[in-house]
Image (cartoon, rainbow, N blue to C red):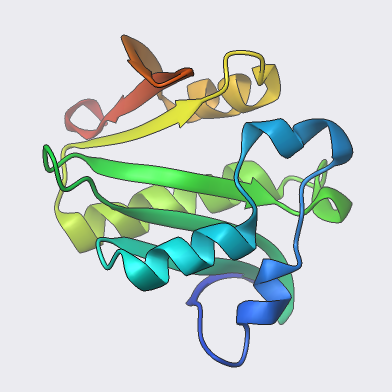
Amino acid sequence: MSLSIREITKKNWRQIACLTVTEGQHSFIESNAFSIAQSGFEPEWISCGLYDKDIAIGYAMHGIEVENGRIWLDRFMIDGSHQGKGYAKRFLRMLVEEMCRRYSCTRIYLSIHPENEFARKLYEAIGFTSNGEMDGPEEVMELDLTHE
């Protein structure tokens, strides 16, 4: 695997927008097209494509929450056709490293749908823990980077 995180550009946005999760996962995450549009209008959010060589595998969006300055991994998905191949954990680690460099942060936050057990296990394997907060209907998890 030759993995990379790339910015969304005029050349690749359609390719990334067309990636989608499996049928049973649609209620857990917004579409990539919606998220790319959001990051276009809300500059605090950064959209990126996740690639293995030149094959688009997934999408992520991260940024700084305006209200409180928290650093969020707000969206993270692997295309349904590429799930189960070990990409999620590798890309998640890469994203955490990139976010640490970009934001010089000590914590990263994300939220998950309470029924998304696969995502919970993935995030816990990286070190995220539930902090007891809710983000609307979703549970907030955080990664404390001071203990690594």
